[in-house]
Figure 1 (spheres, one colour):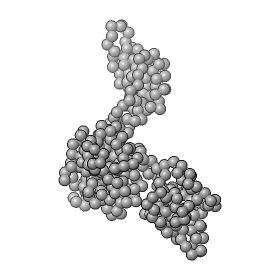
Figure 2 (cartoon, one colour):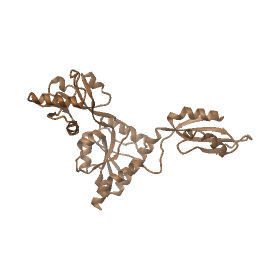
Figure 3 (tube, one colour):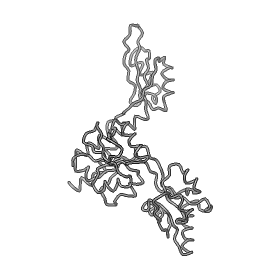
Length: 339
């Protein structure tokens, strides 16, 4: 199959965030009805969208049923095959931010660090049983515990809400995903100060073998990355336009860039205003970070600027797409393998 198969989460916050991101990139998804598990992107022919459970996406990509997909970084590291074909395609889409953390009951007042937890695990062992930890991420949790010297632990798989596990008595502590920690606190749980296993957000992952051996799929992936990167970059900037009087374009430019940090992303664009007046007026445009807007407006006013306006920018492309450059680097082992 030559079309690029893009796997997206079928429900939840990641589903909503992915839809919003792709729409803002001009890559809106056309889905005939919400019950269908397939869709397309009209503005990008050659891409088949497949809706999957987030927990299955990495496995589907490793198995070759999909070429690229959007998942949480935590789920990617938990589910990928160690010697499999998945690679990171884009390392941060800017939504779905959360942390996988170790949380203990509030009543465990003497347990504040992972070192304390290691001591508790030894105490439990001396009494003839292991410390029980409930989590949906046994792989990541075990590695983290081993790294921090926490031994004699039994993992408890829980399909529903983890927060109730210590209260119900089938686990002593939990390791769970949280964005704010509110749900943990409301259930009498406290995050260990050095108990953050991984900081996660939404990412794009892909099948390295499929992308390395199919130029059409790689080209389509590049088009997606170009749009995503240009959109993300544009979110930080606005275009400011104003008319400034001066002897010449060069003289106005010198005045504008006296404060170089306010001169815009690539310097000002200046063009003459064609008017019946004898005075020389020039339209000045600069692309600046949103945090600098007030200072730039003040700077323009100080130069006698009039008619100052600001506009959002949809895309900002640079000389190369950084995420695509990194992807090509990540694909080198697969290129060498088939080369």
